[in-house]
Length: 125
Figure 1 (cartoon, rainbow, N blue to C red):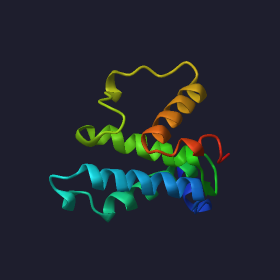
Figure 2: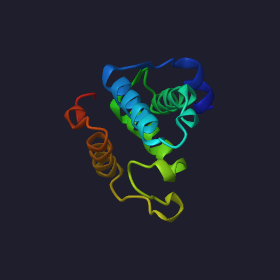
Figure 3: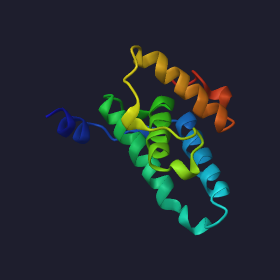
Figure 4: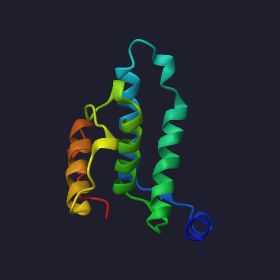
């Protein structure tokens, strides 16, 4: 019932910070995919946008915050180990953190640093 409700109740709009993160990640993937640039298409960016919007809905928000964009990047990273900006991470063998908020803050800082957007940390609450 919750998923159906938030899916119909919210159409989250991107914030400037979330747009910057998603665009920079997409550009980074395009640059890293030197062997076959055609493999990283606009569909990647569209998927990132949809993932970030879905996370915002899950969190009961009508705006896509920096947190939602970072979660979308991390989800994508878990599926693209060969082009990873975070290094090889095996989600199946990772324990759930005791403090999820602190873990996300560390992960957000790492993602923003790797994308050259460290100045965005904590700006989109």
